[in-house]
Image (cartoon, rainbow, N blue to C red; front, side, top):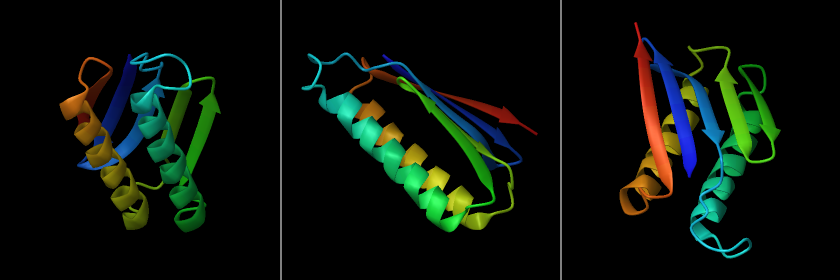
Length: 106
């Protein structure tokens, strides 16, 4: 299962962590994993192009962590919110393979 943890501070996304694999099908045929991976890479590419100095990210064997360092960067927030909406859309149909946990801080 892919576990997604989203941390928000004052209604701003601060951290998005993805961990694990969907395991919805054999390796190379797992459409859930492929969809989430594609969205994550697209999100990282958009952040790199539009918010170069406002975030950090790391990737390692199925684990991705995005940390927004400038919470006031509206482009970063829009990109991350869009990513979260996309992930929730996948979760609606494939909740057996992806779980999103949101943590809100004030």
